[in-house]
Image (cartoon, rainbow, N blue to C red; front, side, top):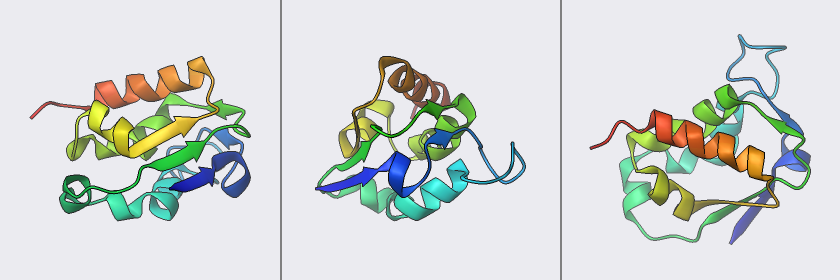
Length: 111
């Protein structure tokens, strides 16, 4: 099982959607491309695979725009429940997880 220490391997403050927001560094687009690009196709969601564990132990903050762009983006392929089976979060605060779940839910348009 692949585990990514998000705060150490990427950044501790997850706030910028893209290069136009904030200081333009450590963006959700960059995160998605670096760690989740292999999921950016329908076939990846159809085939069984080990879940990816995102360890939030060293993450201090996550903003809604980051969560929307990094994770909500994938709602074009799957429902939030399916996403959370393949991409799992550990050592995450209730507030951080609530932000992610809300962005997944608001990004999902139904199929």
